[in-house]
Image (cartoon, rainbow, N blue to C red; front, side):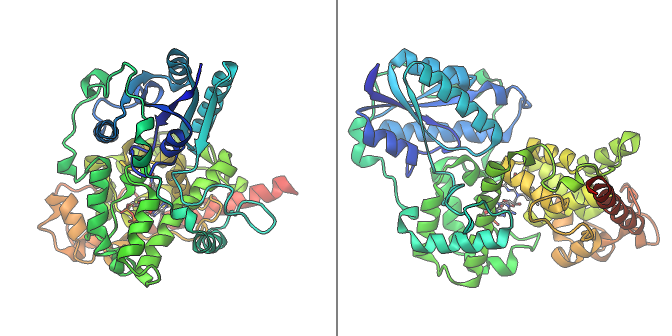
Length: 479
Ligand SMILES: Cc1cc2nc3c(=O)[nH]c(=O)nc-3n(C[C@H](O)[C@H](O)[C@H](O)COP(=O)(O)OP(=O)(O)OC[C@H]3O[C@@H](n4cnc5c(N)ncnc54)[C@H](O)[C@@H]3O)c2cc1C
């Protein structure tokens, strides 16, 4: 084994710039071999056409080019990382594998198995914080326990950020580029079709992969971040950052985003603060799933473990109507059409569609969570799970059960001219906007558009009864 030879294993950090694990490898080893593993345990579950795989593929290609320009080499491998990484380390005689931490429960199990396999041969897995500004143990309550409520977490997170300049440090690989090792055989990327996937026209979806794509999206957003608070809920407007997929796959570091934000905007202005607060939700959910991994499989609030969801044939019919954008509620159907055709969905639309499934249709939130996981370009287990549990009132800091989004009211407030609805459901373009918020009030039904799948008033009552029954049951069990 060569103690001076290390592997940098790129995962959800698809970039060479400002990458903590890469920097750690280069600063402590003379020969750094870079790898990316196409993980068959994930890929085998996906459909042949997957926008995320195409995005990852293009981002790996770009990161490989950057590493090559620095004198290194990124090698693409394929298989189950639990075997591929230890085998590769053995093959090239590397003493250490450097990677950035991933807080998802299944990723942690994988990393534990890899660390154990490496240790059997006397090798180490070295993990760094990179995905978040402040990691799971850096924002704890005074008694040293993790926060479960968002607001105290946010206040402590902001305080800590303000105190510690190191948090936004730049981990530039260039000064240590002579420590890259390009001598190991291997391909820089594997063709998409060889991986079993189709090409996707990413540009047509306004998805720009790689660090160049992320910087382009960020540069556009920084000019309008001041308006974020005022406009972020307006469904027809592109007023949010669109950085979601980049944060998910790490094409731009969160530190670089904050450094750049500080240079170009007043971080104390209300709009900018509102955006920073949203980014904090990402870190809050990430530490929550780390400290309470059981949320990946069920409700944080155990009293809602036994909610009597609508199941059987009726449940299937309702799920099918929701998934196929045919609920008869235009705002919900527009949201689901946006998701189904692009993999994107405005945050306000996610709230409306998720609440509709759980609270209006009475379908188990886990089914919606799983559907979003399959479709969302930015799918991230911690954020998806956290938000579904927030909507379903089962989460650590969720909305109360009696808060039920009214799709008509949401539609009137956030899409008053039905611009969003008409964009995603062009067949409804000729209909007067007023009728698209509550089509059932029209004298005659909208031609070729489904009748409402449920009655709103009745569903509100049923939802309240459902949560009340679960609360009573849990009190009975506890007493
Ligand atoms: C039911 C539901 C499911 C969701 N699933 C995901 C998911 O799988 N992955 C995901 O990244 N976001 C998820 N979100 C949160 C949010 O909708 C997206 O992060 C946001 O729409 C991304 O667009 P943007 O980058 O323009 O966001 P911006 O408004 O510009 O926000 C900037 C960044 O902050 C983070 N962020 C913003 N809002 C939230 C939030 N509520 N929770 C966590 N992080 C947030 C994201 O990383 C986002 O890119 C979900 C929300 C709901 C209601």
